[in-house]
Image (cartoon, rainbow, N blue to C red):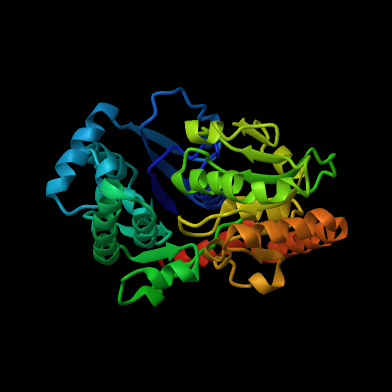
Length: 389
C-alpha cells in the first residue's frame, strides 16, 4: 500500500519523544508499504536525511518561515484554533502538501499530532488516520495550574481551544490512536473508546545494560529545553538533592539531554553534571545507578523511563508519569510525589545495591514483555488494518 506520513518535525535525530515514536513507526511501515514522508520544518540547520531516505520512497521537507510564526500567533488571538496548531499552519504550504499527496495518490494518510491535521483534514477522498499521541488539552490544563500571570491565562485559553479541537477534528479521520488509556479517557470525545491504544516502545536491543563503571548515583534525561523537563530538573536539584547531601556528601547527579536551557545549565555544580547533547545517550543510563524523573506536568508515556528500564535501572517518578504504565505493579517503578518521598526512595536504593540490581532486572524484563517496538508496532498495524484490508 501507499501511505503518506505527515509530521510536524523531521523525525531525525531522535532527541524528542514525538520524533522517536514516528521514526520507529515509519521504519516498521516501510517494510511492507511504500511511504511518502512529508515533514514540516522550522529549523534552518542542515539535517542529515540519509537515514530517512533509506526507509521511504519519497521525502518532502516543507520549510516554515520562522519570522512569520509570531504574526500567526498574534492573529491566533482572534481565531479559535489552538495556538500549537496555528504555530505550524502556514497557508501557502497547504497547497504544496495537497499537490504532493495528489501526485503520490496514497491509499492512506497517517497524520501525527493535531498540529498537522489542518493540512489534510479536508481531503475526504483519502482514508486518513490521526495519532493524538497524548491528551494535549490535559497537559495544557496542568501547565495552567502551575504557571502565573499571563502564562497562566495563556494555558487556560489553550486548554479550552485544544479540548474543543481534539473533539472536532475526530470526525475528519477514519482511524485514531493515542499512547495510553489514561490519556484517551481525558479526551472530551464522546466516542473516545474507539480510539486505539498504540503505546510507545523502546529498542530493547539498543538500550541494554553494558555493565559500565557507575560514575553517577542519579540520572535524569530528556530534551532539556522542554518546560516539563526543565521544571523536573530544577525540582530535582533544588528540592530533592539538598535532602540527600548530608548523608551522601559525594552524591552525583547527571542531567543528560539535548538543548539544555540556561536554567538547566545553571544547575551545574560539584554534585550536578549537565552534559547537553550526548552522541550516545545510552552512556547516561549505563554510567548511573538510579533514574529519577520528578515529572509534575506534561502528558503521556515517557520514553526516557522506558529507556531507563530497558537499561536495567530502577526508576523513581511521580504518579502522573507512572500511571502511563498500565501494568506498573509488575515493574519496579517507584512512585513519589514530594521531595521527601523522592529522597526516601533514592536513599533506599543508594543504601541497597542489591535492590538496585534486582529491581533494574525486573524493569528490563517488564519492557521486553510489554513495550518493545515490535509489540507497539503490531498494535499500530491493528489500528490501521481496516484501511489496509
